[in-house]
Length: 468
Ligand SMILES: [Zn+2]
Ligand SMILES: [Zn+2]
Image (tube, rainbow, N blue to C red; front, side, top):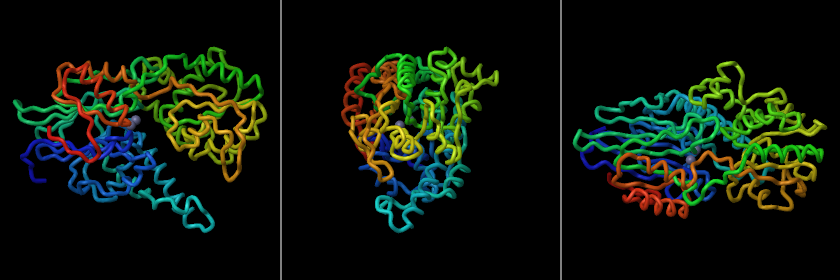
């Protein structure tokens, strides 16, 4: 590309006014870099997933991914399909996870397309054409280059970036870009999705460096997390359900949440705090993600790293069965004694959890236990809000199971935790940009950051370009 001599610019191509679709276009010096390349997941914004970007993909020099969640990485194979050929930078653990996630998206897209091809289907007929194919995914994977936390990578002369641990999911990073001549040196930090300090499994978020600008997420910009005892709640919900003779169905996200649940179940089981009943991880994707963790034991808290070094997975225990084949999944419903099933999708909109809901939601002895955010419009949200009946596979199920929620699980920093992290920037930045939140959450956090940092903070709108 010909060098652009004007000021550096940052364009907000997603996660501005919304939570998902993280995409930021940074143009500085002669570089044009897309920071995150996510899919939009809010139903009203999904059209963006198949629309072209504001820049031709072959004009982008590099993509830098903060982490594997699909609202940060899931658009990348589409970008490759549309002509992007540059490097895709991420951490080695993110690489391992996007491989699983992109293939899953391509597989679901292919299944949807073939369903659409069959006559007689009503709802799926209107589904979108596949966003990308397995071939696009394979081409995208070949473009990935990895960089470790803390090591600085030079993209071009005088233009570098550095990942640091974000403590959000395995491999998640904050990323700081640096460019310009020594006296006009500019540093721009992206928080990516920021995790929480003092949590089991992952390290705490690494403190931010000296920066002129920072883009800060605001998922929980107007909320703090409850501080209850996760294991105490899990133990009593499971014990009570077993005493009634029912099953516990736990809808779960495959990445990080499923492993957290297994970690707590293992500890409860070791301590004899839950009855000894079968536990099924009925999610091939969660199983694949769980298998990635031992490869990156150095990124985990010491207790877990040491367990893996001994050959003892902290996510495994004698009562656990991992089911892969669809027949194995169906056989769980023949198990007559109380058991626990962890299955996706986390918001019950698809996946194997729907079969377990079909068998359990109508049973007053069973419990459906939610451990994650349920977006408006999802089946999970309707159940949590107390819907008396739900539709599954064309059947109406009267909800008689106990519905429970443990709200303490969250991979995102709460409002106070975000403010504390931003306050640990050693200098006073020129300007902060607040993104990745509902308008209310972003605005609340913006106000708090202005007060805490005594600097300018701004909430950009979708498509807006700012000069740095
Ligand atoms: Zn995330
Ligand atoms: Zn996110």
